[in-house]
Picture 1 (cartoon, rainbow, N blue to C red):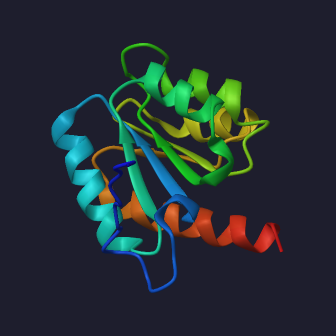
Picture 2 (tube, helix red, strand yellow):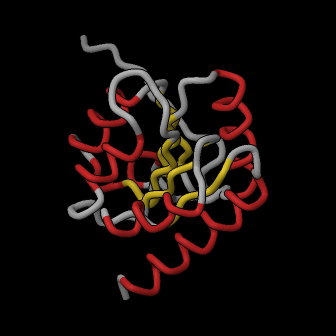
Length: 147
């Protein structure tokens, strides 16, 4: 006899399987910021699976393996392992999803750097509402360009 467990996503709509849902990937090493992002992104984007990683190395692994279901990535810049801007340089040109750099050390120059390397935008912390608006725009722009 084979025993197995079934896990259901209680937030999914009827007939929708969690593993097929598009994912928003959040990467931030600060637990308080990460938890706040998770809460706000889940509230703002209920049709997306929200996934968080704790450092640049974990974000790099996720973006390198199985990134086909990622609809958006939001990366802190100053994380252990690989910095957010370096992840954008590495994955931006080949990832079929927008990437937003969300960091406390962002200034006007960073938006240009991010776009030059294939990212979508740079947003300064702690402006959460601006981040959510930028994420909304990025997802809409991405959806329009894929049609």
